[in-house]
Length: 131
Image (cartoon, rainbow, N blue to C red):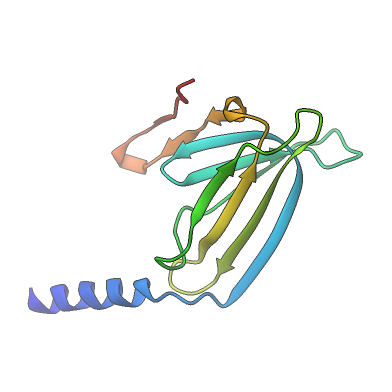
């Protein structure tokens, strides 16, 4: 039992100091919908310019470190301009990917829609945004 406790503590300790193998910063333009799944779990639907195709981009919910601001939403986009996202995400290592920040720039709080979530055998559902 002590061995399992020590192993669990070591894994948790190592996970707290996760250093990704690769860090990507990105600006995503032409966001048409924002989905809030739960907690800090968000995704956006993007319509690339010049196409009629929609693309769903989901962001990880895990923070890379305790100082990472995570997901922030700003209502600073003019009504006639497209919404956008800037992000810094780490890939690789013990948790595969994590968020330094995801800044979602929207017109107003009404642009955030509920999204689905799934915890496997522990249940699934749909988040409702209170307006």
